[in-house]
Length: 229
Image 1 (tube, rainbow, N blue to C red):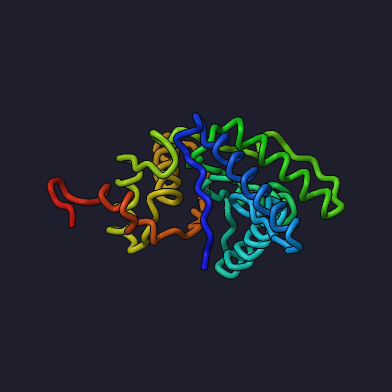
Image 2 (cartoon, rainbow, N blue to C red; image 1 turned 30 degrees about the vertical axis):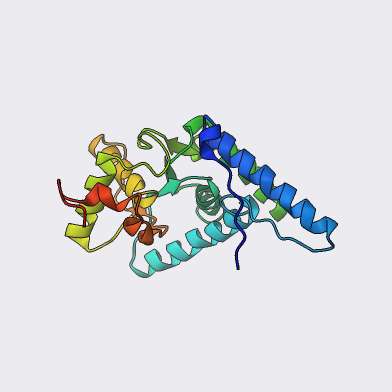
């Protein structure tokens, strides 16, 4: 059975503070277990940065192989950016397997762009040290847009709702309201603004999360007016 320890989000003014508090509490609990002779494995919010970076670098390699089979090459990859592990790995993969020529665009679902950019840079430096590589990290390689978060993390927005409904109707693809829905809202807006002008192949990375569509806190955003079932 799972044992859950609750950290009250209302006690913190920013998501960054909440994440720090939950991770500190996890370390406290881990130390208590060590004192009892146990060997806890602590999984931080968003997974360990190094692990996720290496995994998603591999994702870029797999993506390149699949597109080459179709005689295509990606000009850009767009992804949701929460704790930044996914985007770190995609940028790493672009540097390792495409000479940094694939533009990686993160759409924040919670944090401020400057905070996420700095986190991605730190994570990239750690990954490159682990790999024994001395590669420059161009400033333009780390691109994050934070204009699509709305009122806060996991809080539905009209733009997210439109993006989720558009993909469901036109492509039969389900997005989630917390991550991919807001990321797609960002992509659609950036396309309208000409942010990808000249790019032929822009890949949207679907990172899952579809069950959140049916969560009690999310589903009402998609109910027709006056209907709750």
